Amino acid sequence: GTQYRSGIYCHTDEQLAAAQKWREDAAASGRYKGDIVTEVKKAAVFWPAEEYHQQYLVKGGRMGRSQSAEKGCQDEIRCH
Image (cartoon, rainbow, N blue to C red; front, side, top):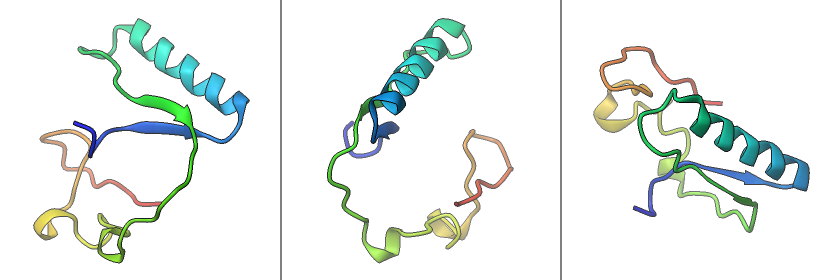
């Protein structure tokens, strides 16, 4: 879908080239089972999310449980 997806949004041409190279290298590496669907685009106008979305994981994530990047992984994601 379009609502929740990964993306790299670049401010410079150098960042854009580096991000596109990362995506190509990742796809060619064989490390991932499926296609790399992370979109790589020039940054546009940024609209901050509503306050209740800010620091979502620090606030406890979904139903107060810690969140992780992998299913079954118990390591917490750190917010920066």
